Image (cartoon, rainbow, N blue to C red; front, top):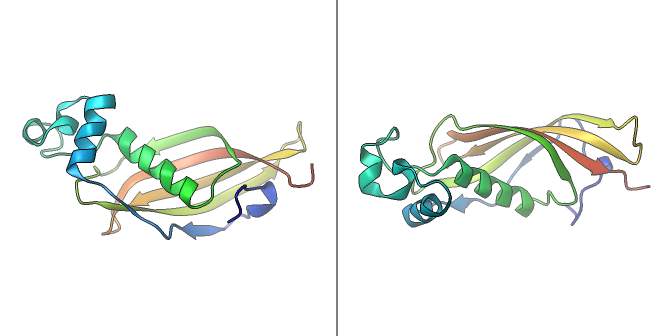
Length: 147
């Protein structure tokens, strides 16, 4: 993909899978947890044993941050997020290798601002076993190349 995406780059039915993957370590999970989501399941292996997760698990926000990095690495730049829905059906664990599987579900030009449009995408953040760690439905805004 180019260094900036335009409306013309999106087509309903596009399916893009990340070529890169990002590994998750216990140290990263605990560091993120201590800084941004200091709940027992995210901050130490000991406290995580008695948590909801029954073991160390990344904060959903940590998984979301990794997902954002994967999107940027895939070339998703020059677009603006308008709306997002996240679900975390399974916890991200130490040793997970995360990648993305993205589908474009809708593309339409704005009626009130014809220099831009709205693109709807769905993507799954998957571990190496294909388990969905995060499911995302997002609406993004992209500009037309000609305006």
